[in-house]
Length: 193
Figure 1: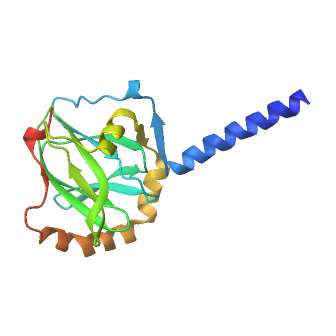
Figure 2: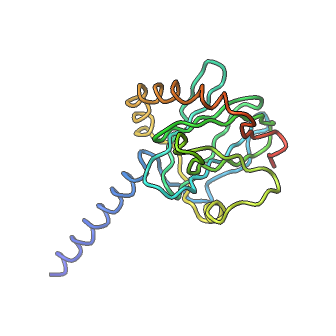
């Protein structure tokens, strides 16, 4: 009987680990003490927080010039760091729709961007710059305090390759609308710490 109890316990642990892995969509959880928020001197660090409470996955990209770089996937209650070159760039989030955020990043600084529910029907999900010294919502503060840290794994990269067509379709559909908006939000060099 004791052997059967142990076997059941092992099976439950394996199933729980599998479920967590599936729910993170190819991202891997890492302990907070292994996460550095300090970028190399010649780069900028961006922390993306998924504070939005909905069941969709957010895929993140950097659009710099003609290059499109896959950053990773965020599900509810997760966050990740991303080191990149300083200067002007654009970030894209894809969910049921696409949204964008321009950024002017300074070397050696760390920035924060929240992934939130959109503000209008055409924008299901959006990137919200977190400005230095500005107050944040309760859900964003909760994520800053307790969201799981994740890093990109091979399965996430495979997901991005598999969905490349859909990603490009959404980018083509939503980018012109976003570019035509007046007063688009922006992450400025002074927002970093």
